[in-house]
Image (tube, rainbow over all chains, first blue to last red; front, top):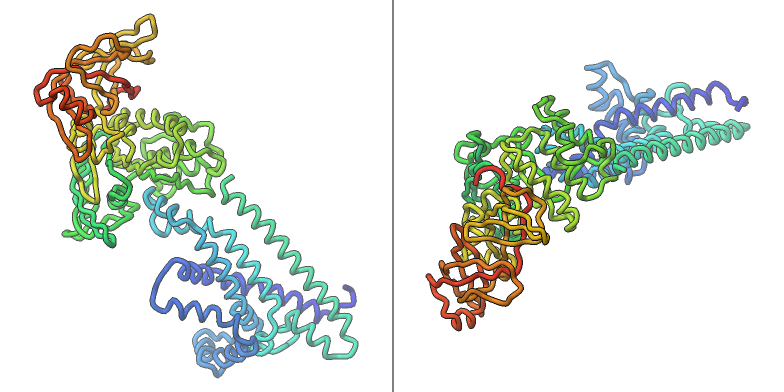
Length: 231
Length: 362
């Protein structure tokens, strides 16, 4: 590990930061979209479903390029964000988080949607007869019951965000200390002679983080499942 | 406290069109599967929005299509006990029981400890629903509905999913609930034994309509309704009073038409009971029978004879102030020259007792 320069440690810190922010920020929207797709019928449902899944199917570079076109300083959304809030996403770590969040979104939504579909709607109507408003039914019955799916979806999204490369490097490039995450750092180290050792260490760290996330999700998932099965 | 229901609703090919009142006490909504009983209850609870009509509970309008009133489910104050317990699996028994209080932030007069004792679930409070038996879970579900301080308790075949032993475990609690006056109960059932034990008022449904409504004693002994009730299950329910216990283990009961002798009943003399006498357990004799083992013979008068399509005849027998039903064959009826007004004797092969008092009015 000692052979790792500050640049590589920056990549590790940045990867964790980008993935965590991407997961946390997309979670409320992910729950909302999963709920709508699982429970509601509305015009444009299929369109929404397709849009959510698009990043899974498109080449990541294409997604990255579309983000650049939309959120670049000259892009329609990017220009608006800059003029109203002074926010720039392109070539910033926030842009990396946006790219990672979008790439991870389909996986998150799928896991949570399955959990919503598994909740017995009869429990929800029972809660209604006991005096719970629709919002209370959601927060006190539905949400606790989909918790395992939310946790699984979040871990999956986090892992996907940690590994995101194509869309990120296209949208925010590979700037050490700003947008260089573990995958792009590994890529950069492999491009220069003698960088193999640093790359290998980053690979080991990457594997370690992935295993830790998996173990954490198993542990939390098992606890929540026991609680919910009601034994 | 009363419930008035007059609703119409279409569900595909099925048309629901019901109009009935439920007075205080236990009103049993009786009918075959698919006769629309559950739809009626769901409409009262607000889980089903009828196409037309109105529903009033104790003077409060819950639904009125014409006036555009449709009180949302969570404001209706109907305690609903479903066929399946529907306990929240992520909450303990205690949290399930207190769920209504948690979401409505109201503390009614109902007491958790007292309700738990009434239902015999004090020892289960810290368990989770997954660790309960079917009978225990259903009792917790009843407690949860009670503690929501409802204006009416809706029970949709709460015992249907349970085996006989579990049913026998819960029925006494339901009787206790009924006798703890005040809370009207609408109880859906297609089991006549439950009707005989619990009902103060009976509403008979068939194919989405109310066929007849009234006191269970009148309806159950009405030969015209035998087909709806089912031939095997048809039988009268009459009030009786324990008079004495003989030393040989036989209990004597007084009914309006005479005396009945039954294997010992654990009830003090003076206790009021209901006895249920199935039509197929009643034989008719034109002379006082002698030399038979049946203990129970009542002098009766034939009030009506109803011939069906088959070989059977349903006779309605007046015994004092009550009516009994008897199923005999057409051949026997003709051989004995049975006619309205004929005085004869009813030989009862079997009498079932509902062990507790007839609670409330009716």
